[in-house]
Length: 286
Picture 1 (tube, rainbow, N blue to C red):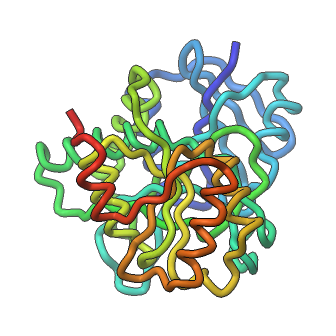
Picture 2: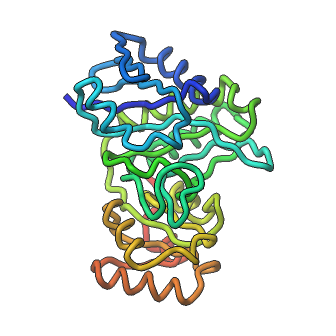
């Protein structure tokens, strides 16, 4: 039996909020504690793991959970807060890792293995629920920008932002929790996994494609990482994402980076798309 572990931090109010909503949905079974972690089985293939520290510093948490509790993991869901200076009301998701420096956990030039299919199904489910409940939040993907980077099983962050008020918002947490569980239960569809290059931190063009085409984004690299982004690292990102295409934000991708992306795509025998072209060429979500 392989489990999906929903990893929560005791020092993160949003994380604990989402955790409580998931337990309300699925119920709570046997619990175990070891090595400053608490594992609670929820059903036949989902468990919650609470840790003491911030999630961004949870390198190797997959191996630590497996070793401590003698279980095999197939995926990790990080239930997390999001913080921004502008205090926007935001629900977001993204993969973790670092391009060059590791200012917020993880290691430099290191990437967690992403779970783009779960992220895709989560995004579609969440946006639908937000409309139904008239939740006054934005939804967005985010670019790859913090730890943990040392995660070998597929993983991603699912976040509520951006202030204490939103972290403790019970309706927001309810919709996030429901969308996580629905995404984990969703049947596999013919989503096409993509790596994104260019754009701003909240990846607006990648987000639009995520919600309106068959593309499912894994790692995304903002234009502010271009100084550190190199051919070897981009190739690693595509391979670890198992991506079939690379999509560039043509309005922000300088010629040097575009040429590098083309070289990497040629080496890996995959295609590069501009966002406008991708919107036309990939079927809308059905």
